[in-house]
Length: 227
Image (cartoon, rainbow, N blue to C red):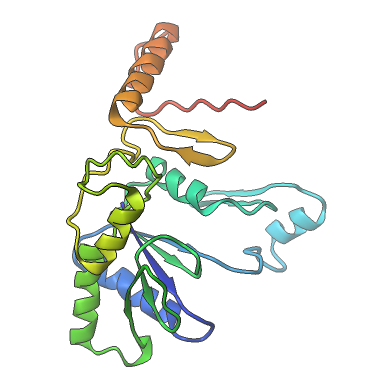
């Protein structure tokens, strides 16, 4: 899963650009997910969710054809991103509104060291947008956790990221990505190399199979330890 940030000041067309990118990437056959950062609440005024929350509920969950959670605690962005692959497999994650991220980004006003390109979404012509799509495909990367294994040919994950946004690095199969197992401590994802992920996965799967009364296919096992 590659990640693209859309950054910029208020009313500079961030949502306009995100909407166009979603359609552009989807039309090319990619599965796209989004994260929207807001300084306000995601509650719905006048609806049951607000009534429940005002009555004192610490956590409000909506369950039906769609599922959502309203929590009073803001989750770490890495926690959110690392959770997504275990919910839905997507190719590109577009994040709108987080200005301080070490992800490749496209800017609608301000720029930083991870900016691929600065654009004006309101005057972006078709040919310019095609270039944006190509840059998104070539210069974005996934969640880097600082394993610094060197398998990508760079000394550190940060060095790879800086080279990638400039177009000086190829896609790599990052060894710290969650393929078979994930470990989080205090909500923060911990990098695990493929060998450790394999050992964890096979050990826990073996334990679970020995506890099963009926033979059923295992798709995903979740263990949460809290103390």
